Length: 73
Image (cartoon, rainbow, N blue to C red; front, side, top):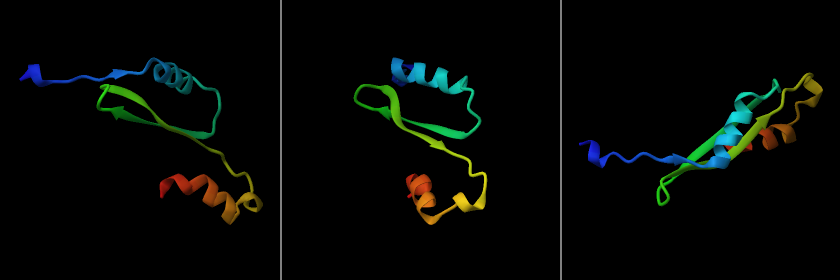
């Protein structure tokens, strides 16, 4: 059964990016989305997001919401 197990490698650039992401000093919210390239059996970077905090309600506009939350669609 262990003969059919396929393990993916992680792209070296992604490893560096993940290390930097883990030890970053910023306090805002951020996310890294990864995907698996089935042909190469490699975990690669799909998207990178930073969501900035709003400090007052005047900054909260409909345009800001569309821009920052558009990736949820």
